[in-house]
Length: 446
Image 1 (spheres, rainbow, N blue to C red):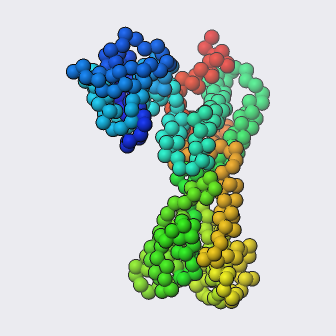
Image 2: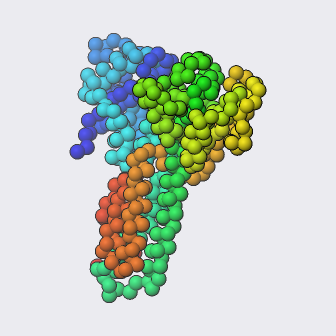
Image 3: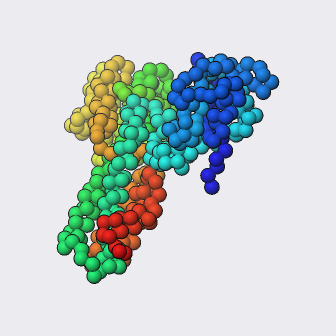
């Protein structure tokens, strides 16, 4: 049930700053603001400088007050924003005064929830709002801004429209077989299905390639012990994060840190050296290294230019050969030392020394990341969205056989499931939408 209480919360981050914002939303927002400010009215969308008072008639602060009259606000309700001087104490005092006058604390996400319930935003925009606040890279902000603008909403609506078309005509064919239907209707349906399958498949592929844009792309550094993995991590971070030693097995666990390359935030994982280990703890570390490779978007495989290729190097070569779907960067490290490694065993490698210049490697990583992010392809930004699209695609593919065999009830079942799943990305599907198409386009029931 919708709660029409007036809610309040501090809208700015905790800490000391020049300005804090306290936000009120609900039917009594204006009334509460007038009591606190002792004003007779506020003009909508006009910033008004006003003193704010406690119930004891003590001045709390001098603040800007903005009034957004329903329905022309974020939540669709009357909204008041107090822009007061920064600091936790002042903002909390204003919050407490609004509560004294009948407001209550907002629950986490309640402003966005009210915006959704009042049809001001859909679920895709709500998710974009949540994630853009946490975004750590320029690319993530750009992607999420596109969703805020309604790109994903339009994408979903186009597919919903086609699925509603299929479902409506199918229901008509089942229930009103005697009515005249277009002779090519099932050919139209098949063409729409083919286009949707391609569109959803491309979206899933693009989303999986670019899923690191929000949380940070994961880059795993692998190699045998003492090849220079920890030195490379320290060089990328520009400080000594990992212990460097000539003793094999010094790094026994995966070390994960974040760093910015170009416009991208990446998570670098320094793994334990991959070798045959008898030490139980070291074995666990090696297992974690292999797991890090599986989870990584980019794998940097290090080899030692000053040493001959041995069985441990061969294990690394086998690992990267069996992960051809990964972006692999092969690096021949210690190029400042005399060459002993057989370069013919690896191709398209970068020669460098982690003690000197690693810019060629950084440029290579940036190029790969740019190719995965600078695209106009639709991208899903959450596991919930990906799951909805996967289920939609699955049901559309399952509907092909019933359509070909004339089992229209089964076809309609799968299309309904597809419609419900794709709709979950933005706003749940209601059966009345299909009925509107049926009775609107076909004039049935006349």
